[in-house]
Length: 193
Image (cartoon, rainbow, N blue to C red; front, side, top):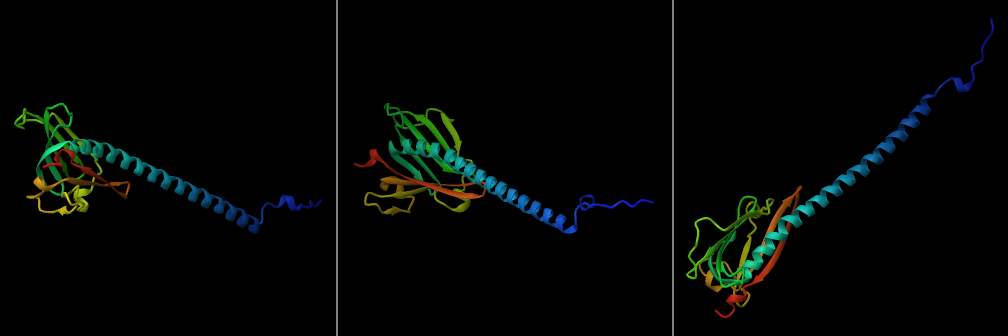
């Protein structure tokens, strides 16, 4: 009978070597997991900012452009405003109602006669903006009204005649993040009233 001597290379891995390899593999997997988690969080933050920019930019511009030309404010609340304007600056009037609802900002516009009577029952322009709005849910006023001396007007019966500027604040929630943007609009056509 011949005896075969086994060399160390034929024996396989020792338990210590297996533990070291598994430990290193676990470290590499943990590093990959941390990097991918950071990348996903960054992508979600970027997407939330994109939603915020989309949902706040256009409504704020449209409302500000219309409100700047307001010739008469008809009705105000913290979450809505109704006013008459010449948004197109062509001598034809418009009646505009902007309202914060459960999760959106509703913009409605009617063409009106020289006596400011609506020419149609349905609005000529009706849009929902900011579908991630939380003004109502968070209790953030969409509109705050200020007089000629910069004093805040909280009495909505006085606001239509006394308002000289309006601060619009749009609160949004996107991907769990809360965002707020505000813009002050000075009512140019009301300065001499």
